[in-house]
Amino acid sequence: MYPLRRNRRLRSSETLRSLVRESIVTPNDFLVPLFVVEGHGIKDEIPSMPNYFRYSLDLLEQEVKILNSLGLKSVLLFVKVPDNLKDNKGTEALNANGLMQRAIKTVKNACPEMLVMTDVALDPYSIYGHDGIVQNGEILNDETVKVLAEISLSHARAGASFVAPSDMMDGRVLSIREALDKDGFMNTGIMSYSAKYASAYYGPFRDALDSAPVDLADVPKTKNTYQMDPANRLEALRETEMDVDEGADIVMVKPGLCYLDIVRDIKNLVEVPVAVYQVSGEYAMLKAAAEKGWLDHDAVMMEQIIAIKRAGADVIASYFAKDVIRILNG
Ligand code: PBG
Image 1 (spheres, rainbow, N blue to C red):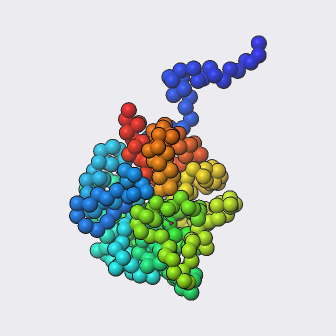
Image 2: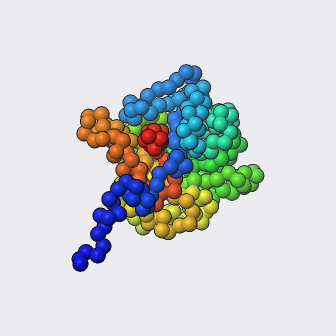
Image 3: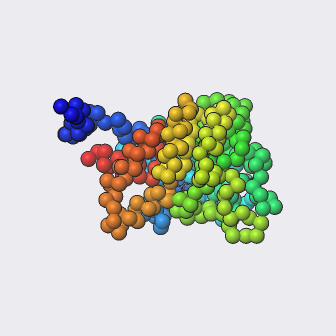
């Protein structure tokens, strides 16, 4: 008689397994991060991110058309800012004709239906490599928030559909929401990096944008006074609830794999879509292991992506997006 329930019955064929599968990945799940540089004809591989590139605007246009043809319809833009345009206050970020603003227009012109999200933070523009204004060894909160609201407005004016503040200053979502509404951008969304941890997995990204905190006296060497302590769970819930109250349309957990417990907690807590950012270091680790022949790249990648989905991600920002589509298309 025993066992009445044989769990292996439901696993006995691929047809049955696919019938009862709980999580499914589609191209609609993805947000594709893109790195943009000044220049022409540039498609520059990032050394610590094999097969991932920085594009000049002309080649960015080609890339988004390719993404669109693969069914990848949402992008998250980051810019690499020339050193001579960096200062402490991110002045260049407000330039209506700056690289980000031109990148937004380039994508919109190439693919009008593409959803364009933009990173909002000072670090790519900061001589100190911090997400906020630095003064006497501290990262100023309220002064930075004012600039973030202005940057968001500038991106909205250039045509961004969503702004994505990644800085972890307190109160920035509300300030950005108010600034956008005041200027008539009621329909511009906010995807807030709500639970962003102070993670060593951001290393390759900082290589890509040359945006790491600089080694100078009176400049903090880490982002630990604003990004979250990896040891904390309840703090992530507080941060996220506050962002929702301040008007975030989508919240985010970052990085991905090490923080899937947080993703599930937040999915159970809030009623807005939850995004997960599988970050640069996660990408680099798998590429490196696969290069050595130690892991099966595609199989591990798909396992990671489905794990992120299963944990509760409604949106997945991932450098693997194109690779995943290649697998999905067989
Ligand atoms: C900057 C920003 C970072 C990432 C996204 N926006 C780096 C940081 O906070 O230092 C990391 C993304 C990645 O590692 O892929 N505000």
